[in-house]
Image (tube, rainbow, N blue to C red; front, side):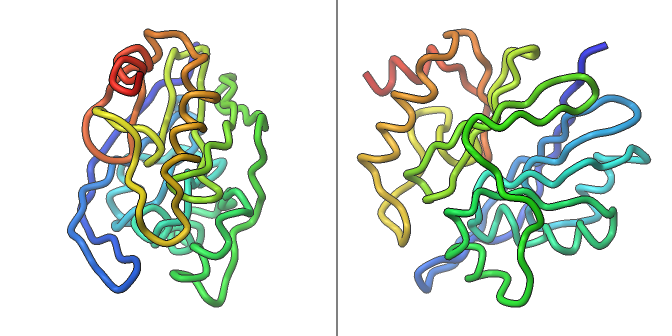
Length: 202
């Protein structure tokens, strides 16, 4: 049986460059009744644990290191022992939030991670953040895009460590080769599809 996707929305703040904003973040959990992987760890450990339930947590996979995506990763790691995975290019951002501890495992482009018999493929998509990644699950026809791609277009740039031309190039070269009907599960807001966002960015 293929893995399933569970979802919750949690609320908190995002801070960078001396400014703080209220945000709602999507929490995505992929797995079966026995084991799972959490994609990003925003705001609220109890809410994330409620989605995990009594399953074994294999990993806390961070799409990038903005504080609203990794702030609770070490606390979740302590509460439900599991390694934190992050692309090493995001170390400068990680250290803005966590000065005394690091993640456990480096993510790399085209890395494959298996949970519940289903393969997750890491796609490095720098631009929103240097180490931003998306997670493609071909078997489920979906992509977890973090803040790289949203319903309506690319993620935000204009702040420290971001680069709009690089982000658009990442999306066009790395994501737009996926099937049009690939469902995009975003870091904030509603789902979209690769086909819809290709039309928006053409």
